[in-house]
Image 1 (cartoon, rainbow, N blue to C red):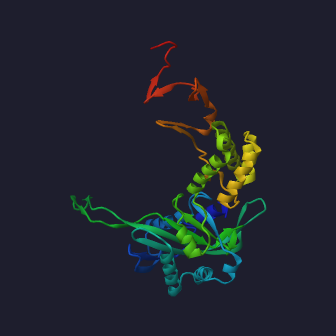
Image 2 (image 1 turned 135 degrees about the vertical axis):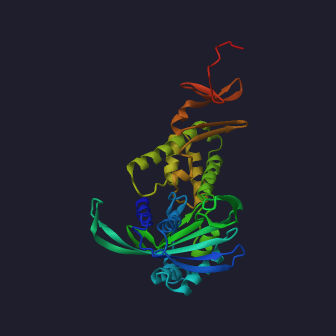
Image 3 (image 1 turned 90 degrees about the vertical axis):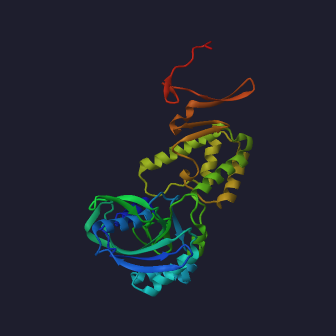
Length: 380
């Protein structure tokens, strides 16, 4: 799925546009036991409660592609005949009306997920009459080209609040409030099938994780029976290791700064183009960038080999390799932060055998928030 397709489905999660008439769920204790199951109609709820439930479900479609949102790809064998795929297809086709199927689904989730404390498994089913769009992308509200039927699952931690004091307005008194259990935003979840080219793709699911350093690989392996992708934060750390080990002495400040600048420029150009497809870079693209930065050919080849080993030759999102929002230069006891556009204000020098980081200053400077002047030459 691309950004436009995700946004199109996200817009479904409001009371006016959604065909979600009920939400189904299962409350699981901290010991991993089913406490209760429920199917709750949205029609009998107050609008504020309905909006809150749809908002929780909608969070499962939030984040950035390649970071919080990733494709789950089933192979042909799984689609033709596998327990995991049959369950998802049956769940979608039943409209969540088969209690045996929903319970089987809950138990499969419980067997696969690792969560601390109690949690809630939420399930929703939606039928979307996909409006026809002309070749220029303009929607035609009078026509429908397909009906996209899907299920959305959100797995939400349930956390206990602390007892507190509250003010009772009708009684005009201060009284105690007991501890309560609140539903937190989803920790992980998915949509099946994927909405690719604005139609159902039963070979894919869209997988969500709240954290970029932990994509719950145990759930991906246990529930979907596919190889989990490397978490976004781990991709960044692994990329740093690949650069350092392959470039060795050529992993200089100027080379890394130039590479950061090129990748940041690539991200900005992609954003300006409004291309909904996710931006990725391959080992060859990165290799060409390193050559343009002055890295020797043998070091570039070493980089591509190590990149292959670390990432199985796959293309990665530039946002998972560098911080496109700021540059951070660190030394013992010193941290310098800059916006990427100001990277050329910094240079490194060796003076009398000592290493220095030089920052060219343009405009006023502050010391602990106080505007100060430069010392005059020769001032003590």
